Length: 282
Image (tube, rainbow, N blue to C red; front, side):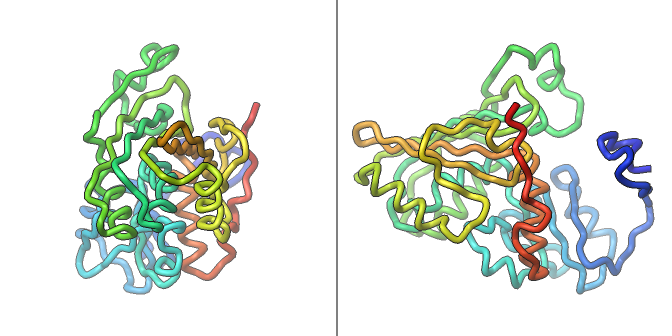
């Protein structure tokens, strides 16, 4: 039974796992380790009408398999393209949080060299047992990792340059491991001539039609978004430096929730269907 692995579903479902592929399903979600989605699709055949939404990183940079092309599934970036897509490459969790903090500037051609830090919970490392996900190591501890080399940088640069082709600078990103289970909090800093009022208006105008990304009027915190598909943004201006804070749940807007959002768009459902979730504030 599914509940043997997902204990939180006890009393919610009697479904069982099945090792047989239904090759004619309407939609297939792939939640596999990096490299495994491409391998599976190379070995298993699914009907050409089946929509595939891959939550791994195999297709985020434009790779295809047996003629299946994948559209990068960040709705705030290219919602219209997603609605007509056959297959979706779901963005990474850090990539989602960072891009949502920078898209309005890129669209306006105002993006310059960016310095970004971001902290994520232990669930961002997946289920594989590692020293750095063990409770005794993680509790009361933080540490940086993959300094300036994180695997999500490729998809971030790809999106930003699609909006601002002249963007020749880099996103200098240092990720951190946090002593909590879920959530991401990112802060990006760059030089800008915009006033704080102008920057806030730019962001509010950009996200006005997007139901899950909101510009807050006061400082945000991570608990405001955990267990939701929301991204909250808060902007500050210090001298000529624009500071953009963004927060998401790495498991929802950074993974499964965004996958459902993409499915809703593909099938013409309400974009928020099944995703009106309350945050776990306390």
